[in-house]
Length: 526
Image (cartoon, rainbow, N blue to C red; front, side, top):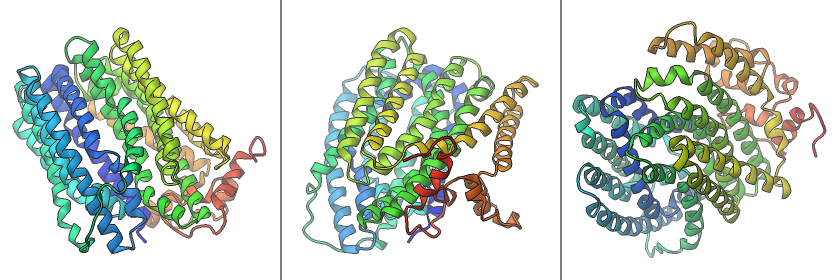
């Protein structure tokens, strides 16, 4: 059985690189390409995403889940790999043909050039087999290929992109290197596959289509907003502001959500084995990890946004300050939603419920986009995105509470220390940020101070999860183990306290029982 701790680290690197690689060059690119250039790239990317959605057809969610249940069956996983691959191949070729027609008949000029370049990204989906390695819990291989090609991408951008007229080169590099990383993963496939005969690519089409509908809905409130900004505003600058603010928040979301991705195969396995205790162990672990990471990120982005934006993006991006403050709420909302929806409803075969909830959020998001974007432009799209995610969060938790699938109150009761630590950090940064003028070094100092204050607060409050993570990450520096009774005194869950490793799993629903201790601070939970 693969180590969740190692997989978390591997996947954390992978997820961060997907958004941090652009962030590494963003201070440079934002100054070179200006909001208009960034906006054109953002708008064109949103359009190709619709065709990519059709090409994937829900297999990005279905693939890891089904492969995770077949890890020990070489013939079964090989058969399923080829069935999913052939299905994706057929859908990608159809989507690419349709997109090519769209790109060729679009307006002449930079827009058509950028659209055609993005077509390479769509065609490259044929070689994307990351879903298979996620299901096999082989996140190290994904991270290795991603790191190498992302570094090459960054190097090429700095070497060749120097003027606003170099936008096409910037997009080309951003498209080709991720495709090359996916192609490199095929070198590892022979180790995991055996010869099979008589595959049926459309055998799981019904299930895949069920997952395709929520994927469309998710796309509505992650991509449609960019398209609508382009439709309802003049020029591409508003798209540029929105894109840059979103990039920053996506980094925090990647950090928060990376553990959830590596948990999907394990949760699917526990559910298929009927191991309810093990399933709840990891589920509660996920919720608490999300709270620990998302709360300080959200509050930190809000308090230092007026220092971060001019330092990171440069002059001309002042509108991103308000956008970043609003967007920061998504770090918490999306983190919690990923656990309730992708890590609970999908592994427990409740795709239909997942679909209804996500479609509800998409409808709300689209309605607010239509209402707010024409008047408030990028700010309106930002508000609509947050409202949509909040609706999804509330709907998901109401469902699990009414069906009594697991208790909701402990999820929030165990986060009290994180809110206190986050509030202390917020106050400290609020009064400190005006001490010096905005600069790169002062921004780095503020981030370091925020992390230190938050960590110290959790240490003084003896938060069990934080202490356990410190032991696992910095064990050699801690000569004395955290008191064994810390979890009991903290009232925290031994499930989340085991956060990034698969130590001994409980023989009873230990996670739920121990989480109850925190919830009993004010009232008895049922």
